[in-house]
Each structure stands twice: as C-alpha cells, then as structure tokens.
Amino acid sequence: MSDQTDTTATPETDPMATARRLLGAHTATTLAGPGVAPPDTAAAPTAPPDEAGSVDVLTEDDLLAVDEPEPERVSPYDRPGRWFVVHTQSGYEKKVKQNLEARIGTFDMEDRILEVAIPMEDVIEFKGGRKVVAKKKVFPGYLLVRCKPNDETHHMIRSTPGITGYAGPGGKPSPLRRREVESFLAAPDDGPELPRRTKPSMIFEIDEGVRIKEGPFSDFQGQVIEINEEQLKVKVLVNIFGRETPVELDFVQVAKI
Image (cartoon, rainbow, N blue to C red; front, side):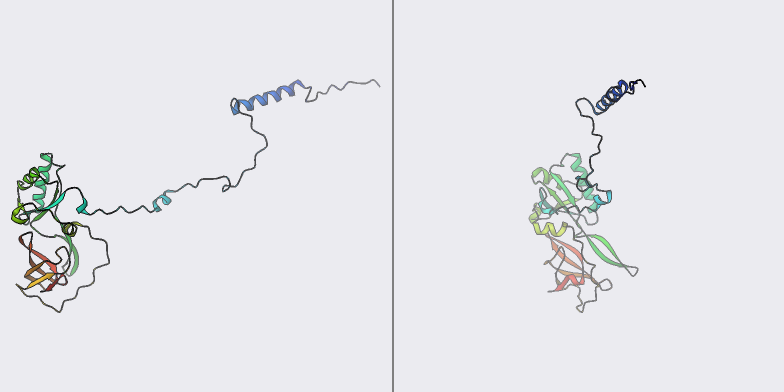
C-alpha cells in the first residue's frame, strides 16, 4: 500500500484559520480603541455591592426627611436703624401706614426709613358662645417706625398725612429701648393651649387703680374705665409715651394696687 500524504490543514498551517485569528484580534482592538488592550475573554470575578464601593442613591422621600436647621431668630431691636413711636388718629393706623410707605417710595427714602409696623396681638374673644382668636392692635393710635435718624428722615415722617408727631418727651423723637421693642414686636412662641379662665374672686371697680402684671404693658399702672364681666376683660387707661391710651386686658393680667 502506497503512503498517502495527509492534506488536512492544522490551525498553524491553515491560511483561513490564520486569517480569522488575525481578523478577530483586529476587531477587538478597534472596539477597545487605539492603545487599549483587548478585553480578557475570561470574566473577572465581580465583587459584592458592598465590597465594590457602591453609592447609595437618596430618594425624594429621603431628602424630605432630612431635618433642616431652624433659622436663628433675630430680635427686631437688632435690625438696622432705631425704632420710634409716632402718634396717629385712632382707627386710621393702617391708612397712615400706607401713606408713609407711599411717601418713602416717592422720595426714594427706602435706605433711610426701613420699616413701618402696627403692633398686633392675639386676643381670645367669645362670640355666639364660641371662643375665637382675633388680632387686635396692641395700642391704638400709634405706629412704630424703624429708621436711620437724621433731620431729613424725621421731617419726612412728621409731614406724613395722619401723623401728629412723635411720642417722646416734648414731642421729640426718642428711640425705644430693647425691652420695649421686643415686647411690642417679638413674635410669640408656640406654646400649650391657654388654660380655661375662671371668674376671679376679686372684682374690679370703675376708676380703681391697677397694675398690669403681664403682656406688652407689664409693670404699667393705670385706671379702670370699663369692665366686661361676661368676657372677663377690663379696659385700663394707661399713660403710654406721654399719652393716655385705653388698653383692653384679661382680668388675670391686672392686679389691684
């Protein structure tokens, strides 16, 4: 039997196999980019998420749950300028405030007259047998004005329609002290519900002298001019900034002298 040569090509000698091998290497290099080695065909072991340094993604609920620091309260006394009190006609405080604010804009005085305020307080009233909370002026007939004082500023304030002058000795501008500003303008903190009021055993009389124990007018003295036993309130005539002003108070806020 004659010897027959084995013509079966091996991968080393088969030109088609060599071409396919070279083509595969060229394709891998093209996909990876120039200068980048082709990826290893053996997959690298994947580390668990916590070992791979994964980043937690916050949801919208997580962001809303983050406690934001409460803004620090600034006393109204520490705002720029000084606070002064001016007289107005009782019942026209809001209109006079609008007049002054309009003049501030007209004469470009925003950098001198900085704020005009009507001090208000929450008062519990009984209407139709129900307890309601109403806002009332702390002292009618007055406005508080924060400004950088000089002659031009004071003249602008005095000449505003409805303002009759400054509340101070001799009608001269006298800046308020810290205690006065914070008593009239500081926002009250949220507190527990007010205790139920009971009729006091002490009954006041008209023209009787009393001392105010609490509230913006604490330590002021005055004279009783009106008594409302149904609502447990008393109206006291108090000398505020040299002017007699009626102030409505709860029975528990005043004491006999």
